[in-house]
Amino acid sequence: MSVLDSIIEGVREDLAARRKPLGQLQEAIDQVAPVRDPLAALLSAEISVIAEVKRSSPSKGALATIKDPAALAEQYEVAGASIISVLTEQRRFGGSLADLDAVRSRVNIPILRKDFMVDEYQFFEARAHGADVVLLIVAALSQSQLNDFHQLAQGLGMRALVEVHTNDELERALEISPYIVGVNSRNLKTLEVDAQSFAELIPRIPIDLVRVAESGISSRADVEFAQNQGATAILVGEALVRAGDPGAAMRELLGVDRIS
Image 1: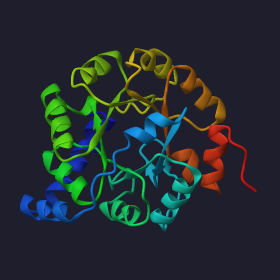
Image 2: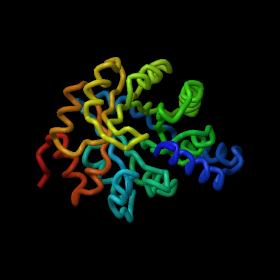
Image 3: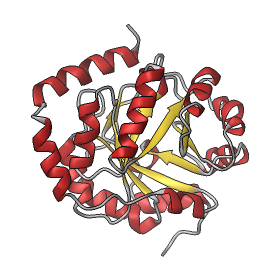
Image 4: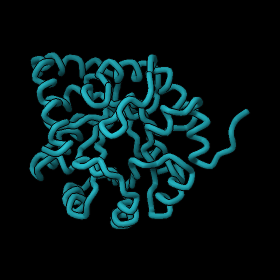
């Protein structure tokens, strides 16, 4: 069993334990604030940042003790993030829907629910908790699931970040006409990181799409490398949550002078 398979197995078990009647979620969706579409913000800057609230990871273990995820998200927003990514997977990443709720209550920019979306229930759940964007990991889904889940997300008003890490996955992703494609330099089946994935895959993504470089970005040089391959956005978690000043760390990644 690969790491990805193991994570998904846990996700399904946890989902079965918290599943409610779909009607309850629909009632919550009717009360939640309208979707904040991230496309304009992602396409307006030379390089946009998706800043992540992330406590731990399968590859690195515990990363940071985040007592107030909403306060961290506020720092990201002030520093210029276009989207806040909130991990909601609990077993390997230490996240929760409570984190998503907390962040939604305090920031005004779009929020990505970062989880392993393998059941249609999770999409209704994401919108009910205020998510504007969801993650679709091509390696975790069949082509029919990928297509159906993308349509479901759009039907609920949300955008999808469609994540790939091989040429085959990119071809599959492009078949569903996505708006946002992410290249993850970390192989979720082995957890190995290879930044050359950016050089191999990002140039193959149509230029009218948002092209996100994910994982392994911890320095200004990493950002420049991704940008030189055609990335229009970066997704960063570890480098920010481990920094004493997340806002300053973001500005440093972007090559912006620190604010005194």
